[in-house]
Image (tube, rainbow, N blue to C red):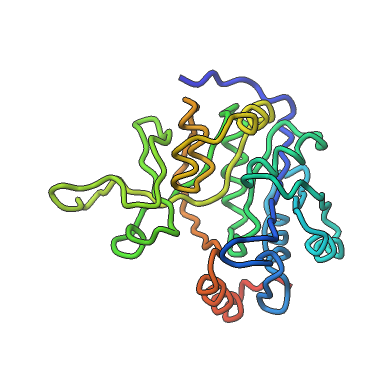
Length: 255
């Protein structure tokens, strides 16, 4: 059982880790979408979330710093050696006055502000770490390794995250299936964030390339909240082309 501790002031900061040297899409934060770098789309969507005390971009590259500065959002240079977005958030968090932190990846240009607000509400209950999920659809959702699947226990805590389809249905997928797709946004209490970042990477994290498995491998719980909001992370050139099509043809383009 969780011990729901009061969060003094519940001051929540959003940190957007933006790694320039992406393996599959180098320079990803600066990839142009509707005439602006992708990182600025993420920034503007996070700005629209209510109840957030501070918004910070954490990057490993001066080119991202220069792209973000005109927006007026605080931007911090971090080590190029951070093994994950969470580690980058933890490095910046040491310099921020906040009780809890939300990690919004810098490759989520379609993220709904409401998703940030949902996670902030969960953090205000004292949950140490939380994230979001949506029901998995048949077909591409389950078979696409770029879409991370998660299965939950009866309390809504994660049992496992995987790039493979989970669970395996021996008798065919039932109407009310148990498969969910992870929505890549995380929340942590301040103390837990530093505890998480101090943990060594585990075998499952390295195998699946999923940072959240570090917490599970070391016996920590992750609360996973079902959300009506969907998003689309940009991991490949194909993802970028699809997001460009969606944004440039949508009334949701942020000016």
